[in-house]
Image 1: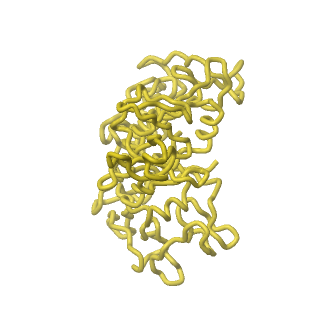
Image 2: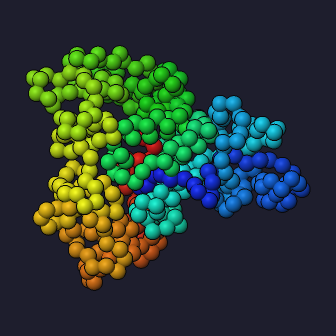
Image 3: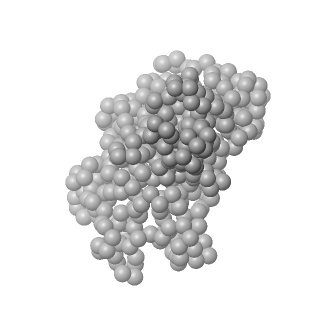
Length: 391
């Protein structure tokens, strides 16, 4: 399963918000495949583009404008279902391909803004959509229903997320991402139906993989077990609920459910994390270092908050801006911007190669690509980082 390495921003500013619906009209009112109607309003063929925003899986352009002015009930439609806007125009619901393309482009827009990718075009060709293969398969098989308005809300939220790695990796952000993805791709498997993950199950159900004390796959959708109360003994963090942790790290002598730690310096468990948009670094809740601040090169996260910084080797270690293309670099420090690599032959930062480009070293390949037989190809085993794919 391939998933995108990046996730985030959506068209903003001059481009406006992105729309997932097309207005259906006859060819005369559209002025052709796309254009303006008699009143001068831009319209498009169903699934076709007004502003050149994207293409679907079949190569057809898709309209990616905003949903904000539409009155379409709760917005829950199966792929291909239609609705009416406030003026009575019939609206064709977006295809799964259009939504996937929307989120992918959103990811690449933010990746460029945060200095992780050189251009949207290079990002699109060298990464896969954050709408994972599993989600696509679930929607196509009816195990999940695409909710267009919730997909828009997911994209809008992603657009507002900052570049900082502390927030991106935090428990809070991962939880919000999971909730918004679950709303956009609603689980539809009823109680007793087979499942592989919780999000395939209808609201209020979980995917139970345990039968007679033995793990089985696939599981079945069932009501979740009762949560362990605060202060009670626990062995599984999930039993304490989404806002608590199984605290075995504050030397009580036993593990018990406790509130998620939210203060800088509070004891924590790396796997369970911290609240307050903090990270668990060396068993204490903390923020990653800002530009110019001292940093820890042995951290279990990248040591600097800004993805455009690196932690220097000199004493004291400080977060400094990564080097631009053509600048001198150090292989040991890895001090080139993320879309560059340090060429050992020249000791300078040079552009990574996008999908299909020639390579002799995997370090030269951009994004999710790897050096195959002399060419950068998408790596099916690429593992996403937080905020890079719906769970």
